[in-house]
Length: 141
Image (cartoon, rainbow, N blue to C red; front, side, top):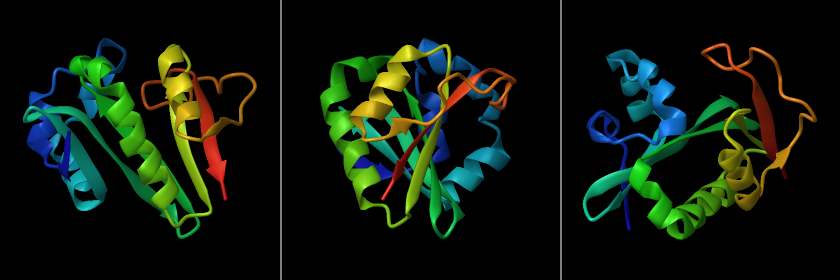
């Protein structure tokens, strides 16, 4: 597994996992350029992108995590979890959070593995960019 700087073409060639197919709506040049300019990375397995991920600083004390995984990521989840945990543990922000689609239970389990805890007992209604329900996960140092 190799981690490299994120490039828009990594997302464009990725065979995105079924649960995140709707994220393709945001693969436009403006959003991809913003991600490339932020702190973003790509995990490559055998030269192919299996995860694009990073964080956006909301405030000096708060960071928002993001990730898009490929269908092939399932065979690399141990390594990807280690990479994600290192990222979370290395951030200088007091609060690190992630929005998790309420219809995707595997992402909720993954957030727990990364050290984040669910802060919403019930999903926030119509919260995500597509109007879907979401949970908020966070780690507060």
